[in-house]
Image (cartoon, rainbow, N blue to C red):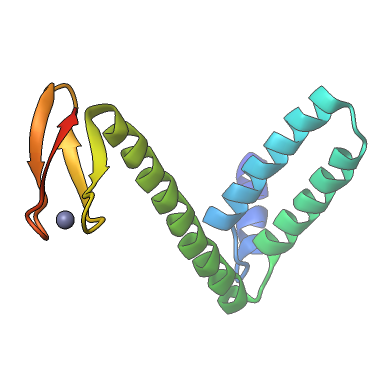
Length: 135
Ligand SMILES: [Zn+2]
């Protein structure tokens, strides 16, 4: 009986696009909307969730595999750019804890100096101006 159902499902899904990363992202977005809806008690989220679910089913059951997979590629490149930007910001914030960026007083060259070394003489790598800073 269950085997039969599985078989029927497999036959139904043949030639259809199925699950991908973009759909997974959409389901995560729907979950976030669900939480937001619960907290804010705004009805608008119900409509957004319904729209997301309809769109997810549409993609999973779609037979236009080339088009869906192109959408997924677009999403993946957007996603990698977004996470890359986040990673860069995080690294910069972490770096601020251990290093300080000074500007050369004569040419404006930025110089990265470790913190906590007391008074140090910095010499600019570009114009070799020397200046004293408290690191
Ligand atoms: Zn300089």
